[in-house]
Amino acid sequence: MTDATATMTAVPATASRKNVRYKSPTVRGRLPVLILFLPPALLLFTVFVILPMGEAAWYSLYRWNGYGTPTQFVGLRNFEVLFNNAAFSRALINNGIIILVSVLLQIPLALWLAMMLAHRIAGVVAFRLIFFLPYVLADVAAGLIWRFVYDGDYGLVAAIAGFFGVATPYVLADRSLAIYAVLAVIIWKYFGFHMMLFIAGLQAVDRSVLEAAEIDGATGWQKFRYVTLPLLGSTVRLSIFFAVIGSLQLFDLVMPLTGGGPSNSTQTMVTFLYTYGVTRMQVGLGSAVGVVLFVICVTLAFGYKRIFMRHD
Image (cartoon, rainbow, N blue to C red):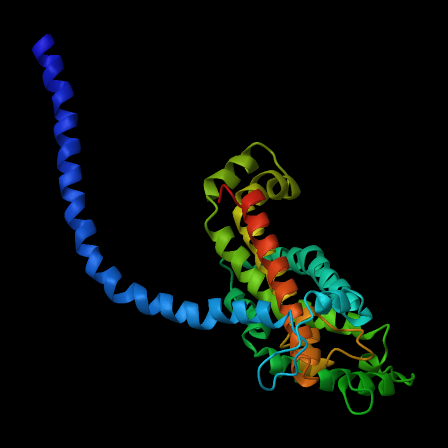
């Protein structure tokens, strides 16, 4: 028994040594590839990401119009001006509203449509394509199209109002209505992306689990609540992550639609950065906006992944 035991314990040790000897040439074989491809990637990342971030942080400490070398050091004065600016406060509130609407309306709508379109029935591919097309459309083109739709003189809204014989609302010129018009376009534009994520997640759900729930007498709502939704947990969390980060970076859709107006009522943080940092040449103030936006995005991204996506 002693010899047999020694033999049995010796085999895993030998196998372990063989595995170590087998893996080491593989690691050595990857070294030339790393040496060849990693430095160019690091160089590009440094030039186009790290250095601009550092420059933005540096410029945020100066009052500078973008010409020559910044010399008027003001410290944190740009940040003080920024947080006392009513337009930037409005931009922060608008970003918060966009996040809430994206999470509470856009994602449930996408999930509902995905539940209907996940089954293999006649014509389902055509409906998926129709609902996904707005996301494929360029953001600038979508903004210009909807600007014409909302036009109170020649757009679709004007035509509908004229058909019913009522006064035409100038939606994009009304401070109280413009933000709702933007939110409607955001939902229309991006829900198709989340819908396709949910469809992919639903197709990965094991049908036998749903059939077992049916055998146990579960209703449609009970199957969704206790079976489908828990199995889609990782997809839902990923969809919320994309919605939040995308809402914070919203720019291309708003600029051709409203330009942040009227009277800054539809500004987001990125449109505020463009308006003040680029068009008005207040580069120091615009850089401060970039720093604030970077801190918010990084904090939310890492915090969300650490709290809600740590097991995914």
